[in-house]
Length: 274
Image (cartoon, rainbow, N blue to C red; front, side, top):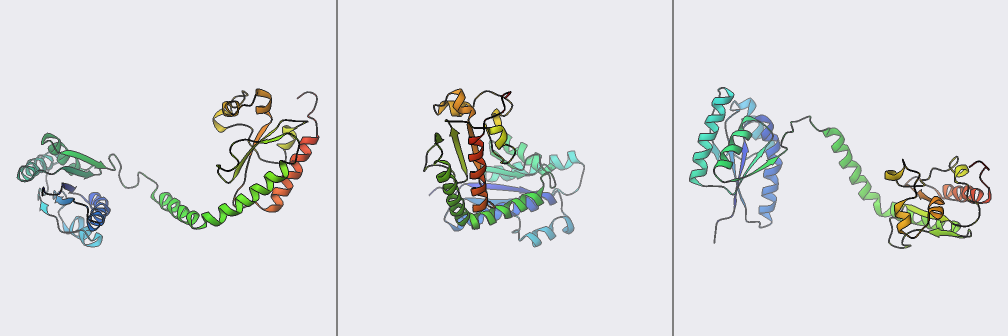
């Protein structure tokens, strides 16, 4: 049996250690599921003092490096040259299938260049980014919001579908009202309705209900929606089409009030100058 593919994980400075830790966790997870893949943790030694290196290995639960290039201190040029020559010897002994680097420190650049010259593919995680580039607190909060939304999704979807059907049933009782799109295969919280008969005063309705008469990408134009035209509408019926949206805070009272206002708009003629 051929040996499992080998991936070099390059870490040399403090920002690398924090980024490499979850990658190692991911490798261990896929290995536990039977994936044939190996990793080799290569510490360049760019940061070598315990406060800048060893303590992070302890706190993050990182394994001891498989290889430590021990380049130590020096100018950027000296460190770069030392990392390149020592990592080249590592690859000459056993060439990896992939050199995975993180961040944008000297070790990242030096190992990437060496791997490229040696015919080893390079993978770059968070290329061009440093800690603080992204709003981490907002990303974490968004993740928490998604988790909460997932927990409530089924119940809220059922409630919104029930409210949508309550709204649709009452509006379809009006003459000439047409539902756009499939009655069944649709997202639960929107309705697109065309009022093809009688008077429909959308200007009056806009003072009491928030609705959309076109798509966001077409809002700067007075031309009829190309989507509605593709559905078979002409320009007149497209101009008499609105989209209503429901949300998690919509109530039955809101639905009934909306029906009342829409019926009133259908009964009132627009001003003669419109």
